[in-house]
Image 1 (tube, one colour):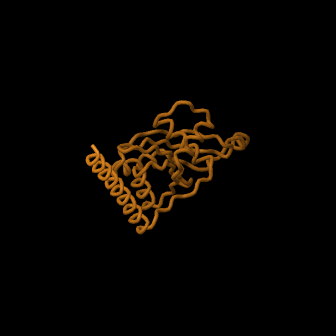
Image 2 (image 1 turned 135 degrees about the vertical axis):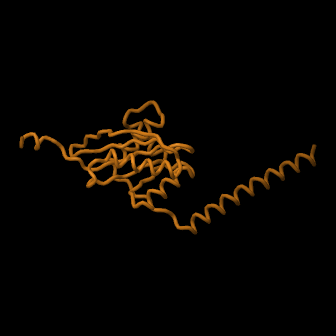
Length: 174
């Protein structure tokens, strides 16, 4: 029996990969052991809204049986669609990392994945979170969020102004 205990690997940590879209979150829970072997514990799809986030946490707790192990959530930066789940995780004191889409794409490519769908992406993000030391996400200050919103609004107004000037120019010279 002691020989069997020596050869068995101890689990190190869990990671939940989240592929974010406008309406849904495709998730995958994986665990890594001391030998570096990654094992998938399960996958599920939930709505990208607060009720879906609650069911996601319940589902994760069900699949992460060893509560002493840390759990990390990893997702891609997807415009604004990932922000609500990131804030939700942060407010619940859970560790989350957000990676750039091209970094995730190149990681999946390095694993030899040629096809791409939500489930494959979630599994890849989960494995990436287990194998790499990703930085934890920290929310920006409210001032930065306000500045970003104002900058985007200014850009939209500038585009509308240019469009109107082009239309005026076309009318005057037609």
